[in-house]
Image 1: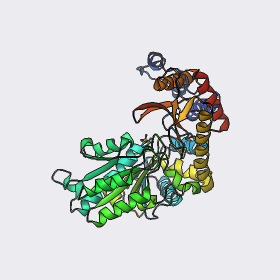
Image 2: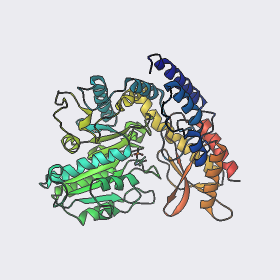
Image 3: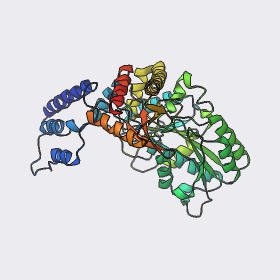
Image 4: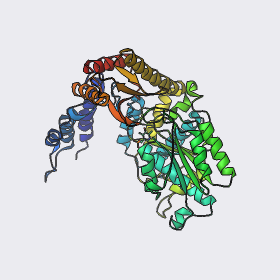
Length: 467
Ligand SMILES: *Cc1c(COP(=O)(O)O)cnc(C)c1O
């Protein structure tokens, strides 16, 4: 390894990165995905002598580049994939160059403080209780895990049990109440925390997959003792918001009856709506709940990966996550990232949030929500007006559920055919879902780069493949 390699490595990576980013509006959204071909292109096992770094980067560009999806382009509407804000990208380049390991202030003071500030700005922007704690984790999955670990700590502590010291065996039973139609990561987090998937109580939702307050009331009436409830700010299918005021009232009543109670909100895609004045009515009561998970890599358009765990009760959050070791340098008076998430060594991922919030500004964050919601409505209007499709959900945020109308009868088969056709041609990318037993197409508008023209081009492509 020679010193001069930095320049040639950066030149090779930088020019390929620039070519990729500037090609996003025009490149095929989805590359060919033949597993055998991808394997053949990349299967170069390490030789005995190795290879000089610049050559490796050049060959990576050559071999892997053709198989990269344009997820950061304006016409990737599959799953719930955020774009790449330029400020986040710039920060990520620096974070990679600086190569900071970010568990503690004592190890990397600048990163620790940038994360501390980004955390404060976010809590403020979202209108959450000012003393809330925040941890940067890998994604919504780990954010929910982190918040539910804090919940587990607190409801058991109130019941006189120290779960970190004594574990779960012999502990008071914890009631876990989730909603039907919620995200799979909630059950997975519960599994990691020692709550069996089968032991949860599942509450019915309305036709928009928003939790029915009467059903939640009934579920809570039937249980006593420590209770964890999970609801959603932005359902994965409908983009819907639960009635947080009703949920908070029910939680208060359950707590007042002597049951330690914690309500967690999965806001992976849409917690950011709390920063948009136009969404104020939909998120009313959100700040009365106990913890909130979200993804900076979705609606905020920060680079992958970056999830966020926020807890009203900072002491519970810290008790569930913190770790002490004699060789570390802790308790310096500054915030140590390792107190607020399950990782130890980790990437300085909060720096991308710091940069993106500064670049967007408060108005820019609100505008991102307004614009993606507006573009989702544009999709819904155009598709409905075509007469070829129906819109199944109330389009209240960035999410649209589409029923393709097949004159031949099988709507689900037509949905799959339309999605596959558009994918193969590379004009856009959509993914499907099964919603209340029916195969549908899902649209998720989560990228700052998407504009009206992208939506109209994607609609034309869809209609072409609908025949
Ligand atoms: C994406 C998503 C998750 C999971 O987040 P990851 O960042 O993929 O771990 C959880 N809940 C909802 C509603 C989501 O959309």
